[in-house]
Figure (spheres, rainbow, N blue to C red):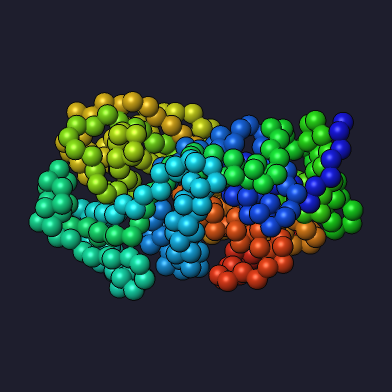
Length: 374
């Protein structure tokens, strides 16, 4: 079995792992990324790629500062990665419209307006039924109104991972398609990573393993409270003009992507590691789509995809050094915000590993907030 020596081993080749490798190598670290399947093979390569910082779990709350910074970083990295790799990640500013179909939903959306309107760089307003029909006459007659947000965006998640991979490789990052099967440790320090075909001696390890955190729990003798949350998407050949904004309702969305297809989703399924496609999910997504856009009844299915998102037991991120272990870090638990937050999580964790001060508050994401880690 071959043995190589590097500064950092990153376990996981999704958008967080590839981005962390990019940032660490940019600052001179010798990095190997180990991925069991292929780069972007799971949620990072199949996600819709919504960049919507003003909604989701922990927003408003501890995730909001990261989400705001994440949007700025995405816009900056879009130009940089285009220059470094020639890959268009399809970062595009696109407004977001969230619909209300009853008074309870209407009051909930209106109750969020004040803090949303206070965020710099975003224009947020309430649209009544007539306003909705004026921006797109296909919106359901049953919609009471909605919140229209300008300043949001989208990106092609797979292209993003591909661009990060190529840019990192140009800086010397090595990728290994291999499976980590254990760690080498000395007292409270990880000194190496063992795969099926090799051993890597290292000073630091980053676990960006998504929902597969249970293996890390076993290796480090602590509990990593992260689980898979399955999501499915359907892609349709849709009638009429493209949607010029992303439409959402009750956790569902519909948007026309640069490929010309209407992407609609998504489900939230607690089914463990089962990532198979289901008719039930397709029908559920289609029902929500037709609630928002009844004219899509004649749309034809092109493809359906599924992926597993990592979520923590309290819905917040796992970000920082793993307690009681020297040089061991984790970046996980972004759930449905994985594409938005991936870059900023990677940058934060790279700074922590390099001893650089972090400018956004990350205390709420310490893994030792869970009492069962001792």
